Structure formats: structure tokens, C-alpha cells
Amino acid sequence: MMPPASKPWEPEYETIAPSAIRLAIGERTQFSFRDIPQYDVSRQVVCRELVAARQALKAAGVEPLPTYNDYLIKLVALTLREFPLLNSWYEEGAIKLLKPVNVGFVCDTEQGILLPTVFDADRKPLAEIAAATRELIAAARAGRLRASLQKGAGFTITNIGPTGADLFNGIISPPQTAILAVGALAERPVVEEGRVHAAPTMYLTLSLDHRVHDGRHGAAFLARLAESLGDRELLGNL
Image 1: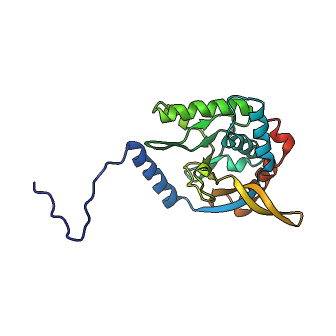
Image 2: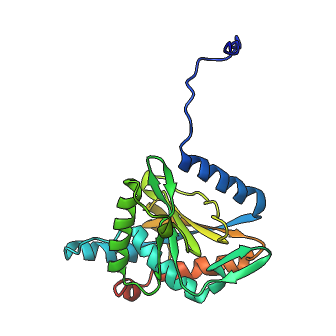
């Protein structure tokens, strides 16, 4: 068979086949955008106490040193206890409130993103979460992450802050009903007690399934999470 004649206006190109993971990502996100009425709520959060808490662990030589994402997994899990509707699946016209608080997180690999799960994240101490995520990320990037370790989450965190992205929104992973997008932690101008000064902040964007959640509920969740991120005592005892 003769190859199709090239179009005179078309530049030269090379064709590559998407990986199986990339195809699966495309199908899942296409379904999410097509079938889930999604909306976003965002909040800038001052993270002075979060930075201080992690620096204290680093100075103490704690290993593995928790990442900021590990802190967020733990704090989100604790906040989900207070907002159980966000720890849910929507399937066949029914809302399933999940009893365990399992938190998924986006892991970037050469083949595409995977979603490992930290099971019972609300009950695990921060140190155990840090060890678990390190093992999950290593397995994912080596192509050894079992399918069973990518299921069961009721909520997902996606964090591309380390790339320098300030603000973005995630795509809900069905049948979940929410996802939290975490932007870069950076010094930004803030107003506190009537004064403008620089402080470490991050933007958090919560994307929600409107079949299950209203804006007020999402805003309240972010407000409670922001409060936890500024709680020195809580951060020191995770």
C-alpha cells in the first residue's frame, strides 16, 4: 500500500505511540471531564508554621524527612474526619461514604502519572506516612507498583508545586468526588495585622463534584485545612 501523499502545507513530523499508562490517563480524564460537573474553590494559605515544623525535624536529623506533601496527606486525612462527605465515591447515582480514610497522591513517572494510596492515613503517624510514600514512589518509578496499591482512595492530592507552578486545578479521579491541587510553596506578599510583608504561602485548589458538594462545603474544608497548617502544636505532634 502506498503511503498517503503528504500535504504541501504540513511540516515533517515523527509519530510516537502513547504508552498504556498515557492511554489510561487519557480515558480516565476524558470520562471525568465529560461526566462529572466539576468546579473549583481556591485559597492562599500562610505556611510559616509548616516550614518551621519541617525545619525542626531536619535539624534533628529525622529520617526519612517528611516532605511537605507528606504533611498535607496527614492533615488532609485528619480534616476528612470532620468532612466525611468529601471522603466519598459517587457511583450509579449513589454517594458512598467511605469508612477508612485512604488518601491517594499523584506520582509522576516517565510513563505518566500513577495514583498510589496511603491507607488509613488519618491513623498513621507522619513518620510512617513519610516511609510509605517513599516506598510507593520508588515502586511506581521502577514500574513495580501493584494495582492494589492504586485503589481504595476516597480523596486525592496532586502536587506540582516543586515545578514552580503557583496555582492550578486537578481533575477528579472517578469515582472519587474531590481532589486537592497544591501549588508552589514560596515567599509572597501577605497582609497580616494591617501590615504587608513576605511570608511562605501556597495556593490550595479544591476541585469538587457538584452532584455531591456545594461551594460552601468546599470552602469550609479549605478553611479548616488552612487552620491546621498554621497550628504549631498540631504540626509538632503529627
